[in-house]
Image (cartoon, rainbow, N blue to C red; front, top):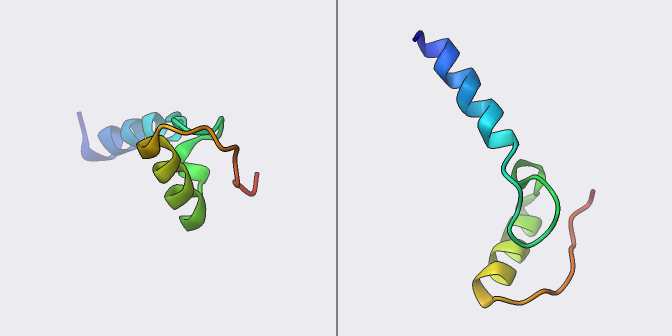
Amino acid sequence: MHTSESLSVEVEAEEQVLCASCPHPWNEHDALGVRYCTASTAAGVTRGCICSR
């Protein structure tokens, strides 16, 4: 497999990763959303979503 082919497959797979805390794709989180959702998941709490989507 060529390098460019493997990179495009990895990017497509990454785009499909959903957040464990909210219903949005992980790659669409801004810095605040990443911090908020990571803390929510680590604490095991459900406290809604602050994503700008």
